[in-house]
Image 1: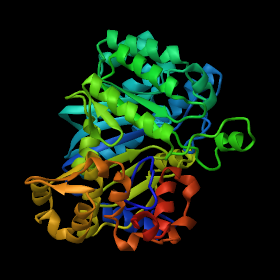
Image 2 (image 1 turned 45 degrees about the vertical axis):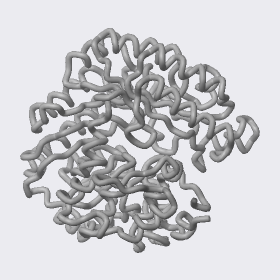
Image 3 (image 1 turned 90 degrees about the vertical axis):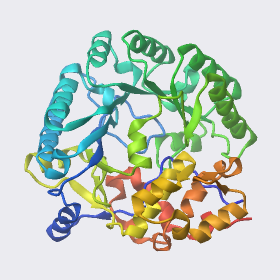
Length: 466
């Protein structure tokens, strides 16, 4: 087993990103993306970079909508006009025009802040300017507080076919402590309203080990989930990010600290998740994701298992294009000015992956599904997976963290407890102890911070075993 357990909210590879600082590096970046070459399958992420309130532990977005409804509508009107303009701009590029769009995720921020008129403009642009696959999964992410009966009926009759709600908890006192914008009953009422409208494909995000979150709270949450008949559940360990308001409140003694991630209580909470899922007929098809058969995330499938291109639009969005990661600044005005001036919106980028680094990325992402299909790897890369990573596989098998079957490399039950450390085994040696990325514009693209921090550390810290 490893000496130090790695906990990441999500994983991105390669970890390091570098500022696009001048016209020379910008031109080189755009040329490397080959936007005028034919594309194949891809997914799209659309960022709605606003929230009504900032949850106390959130490190990502700080742009809050005005309290006045007319001002809110005006802000969103201007933003959606910019986003639609950007969508049409990319639709004119050969890489996206001739490719199949497999999944769309409208998130943020808070995607559900968009009103019917905004959603209509975006969805009309998607269906009119892009080649949507017949089974294209289109997810609207958001908060229960934003759904009205009128909006729900519009969504039910649109091309949106999946809803993702950040419930977090059904316990009023817990929601208050973490600063959620919604009330527990609002989530329940909204889910029922969505289901009555025919929108049964609902993903619910739940958090555990929040301040004052007890085993009794967690048990009550599962009872509500059972009564609602949720088909997809994603669970997250609550994280208190340095520099957030929640950290300040905990340090000041105004909020109770969370339990240690290695504590008996947290382990018990994790066991309760597995038991609930099993009782509900869900399977743990992906790390932290549980679903009834047929309700697994297609967006994640194409992004993580197939590793297709991902086009991200809007502040804070990231893309993966032609084996290169790019990011857009969280600065909304900077993004809008670039779009309206016809300029490049990417403000940060990774190196372009070599075939070796691309194969590492493939394995790392597929491990989120606890397995690597030998035949799929062979068809994708024209090589045997074992030949590329012989020493790593031998070591993981020796320690009973993975096992080999005739068709797959599979993470063992013991290995699932160390999954993120196992994923780090496949990081290239060049990705470790890279302090250069620490000096880049982390504040403008905070979603990458944890990956940069891991890459700046020593390999031995995460991968040394007992």
